[in-house]
Length: 181
Image (tube, rainbow, N blue to C red; front, side):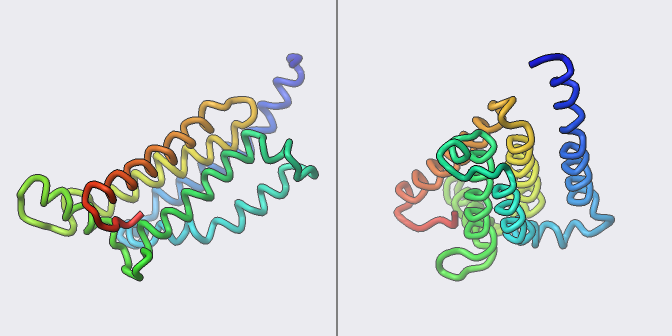
């Protein structure tokens, strides 16, 4: 890549970076609406899916094997898969329970520590919000925005999806019961 190409590429990333920063500022600085966000963040992710799919279709005019193998498409697919997972894990699980993950995890922790069961502690709604928006959504958006020049964020997103899946499968086998997610 020539110096001119690098400069043009850096300039072309500024709108994406600005949109990402503004989007997360609106998400993280809700002007006193933290309770609302803690309860409804996963719905924003679910409703974001059509826009992400539209973005995937606009990545290029080619929708063939080359486009599907691109790091940008893979990062987008991983983020979309995780958003679907968050819908089931944090909004409505397969049995129709709403917001069941927090109570489930806190019950497991209480059982393991032989302490009193508190459905809101130690895993709080705020903690769930921070973990999922900063460690999943942000990594996913960075992976989409920096691909194909930097594949490390895409590898991080793949690792997040893989580790999360393995933890849920191990938890289901260890407790011989369904766990939300």
